[in-house]
Image 1 (tube, rainbow, N blue to C red):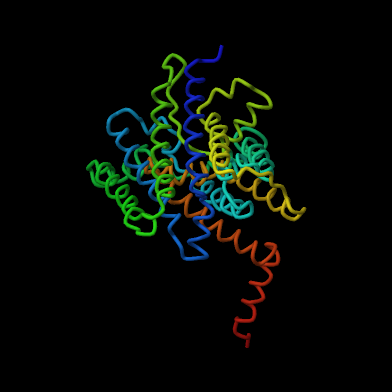
Image 2 (cartoon, rainbow, N blue to C red):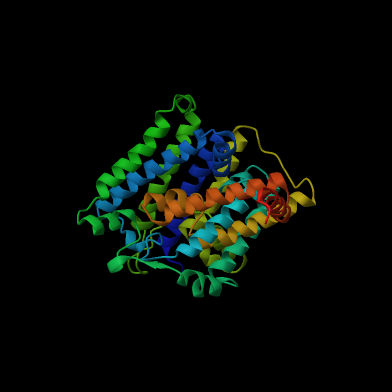
Length: 369
């Protein structure tokens, strides 16, 4: 019989997902929208909200680590070898796919909860390609090639900033680092007058941070020591969507997982928020061009999210709360990928974009003698 603690963890994941989906849908918060506002409109208010979420999550997560409750080495975010090539390639792919779809995996779940049938297709394709990269068709390429191109940490330490600073200075700087970075991110959001007039946005940011902490707490606290070593988890929405799809199609026992529970919770929470606001409505693709764009974007996010080790939430907040080295690399790659995706959407196909840039460079090149 399936371990009862696993089902309790799944139920806790569902509850946390409901709260996350409700808060984000009510505030109309979107990671791609935040990046697009900053890149194209010089408006970084929504980006500051995600910074607030990261700051809250970082302060709480590092407190759990310092108390001895949470062991970083039991998570997947701070390995002793950093798969740098996979993270760079995957994060750029994810960011480009996010631009094609118009939101990330988490945002697609939120949209699905409001009746957007386009997101149903995105979730199915994202989940299938994610699982194929995690354990199926593309797993050998990921494990045998890309993840072999890793940077090993000195003396076998973990790939997080606190461990590296301790190694370099001989002093444990986890506390000052967490306080400076976490408090600084919170201050950037809370000191913005415009954001102080947007309580829903601030509430959503704080909620995402607190729910990330809650994820660590329940997955450690509900772990059954007799079932195996602890595997702390928190919010992330690529591999978990793949596992949810696998559970529904092939193995019902896999529903007993925190991440799978959080996937269904986000959909339910977004539905509740839309229902209370009388904003539930069915939406579908306008034409075949829009459908192709969403299918390509979903594939890029599914494969890229696994290679990068997480999505905008999984790497941007959850890995960031661990002070993981992968965090700024993955986030930077996703922003770059999003900018590439926006350029493709504005300027046409990648082929047309490359041809135009090549012709522009050719015109600017000095004539040969």
